[in-house]
Length: 127
Image (tube, rainbow, N blue to C red; front, side, top):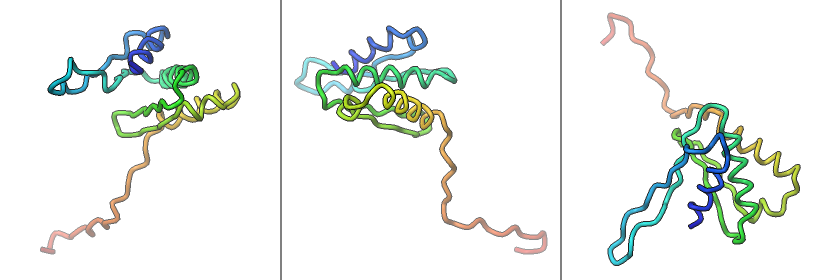
């Protein structure tokens, strides 16, 4: 139910309309059907801020304070935000949060170092 609600908020935003779809979970035996498990959103460059703003606004207006959203990029970059924390913020703090979350999602993660040194190059005569 929560994901369907968020989907309707996204559909109201011009730049996100038609870019989100629900991914159903596996049908469990003995149940009437599956339920939405993930909301997948396809974005163009520069639309991350719009997505984050909609998610933050949606979280602020939830009746239940126990909702948490995780926004994850295909490359694994992820941010998580909770309705409890957002509800207590003033408008300036909300704007700052939207900018911070959007920047975190738009930035490329730094390459991880494996800790294993690369082998030294060999000359043609070495075996």
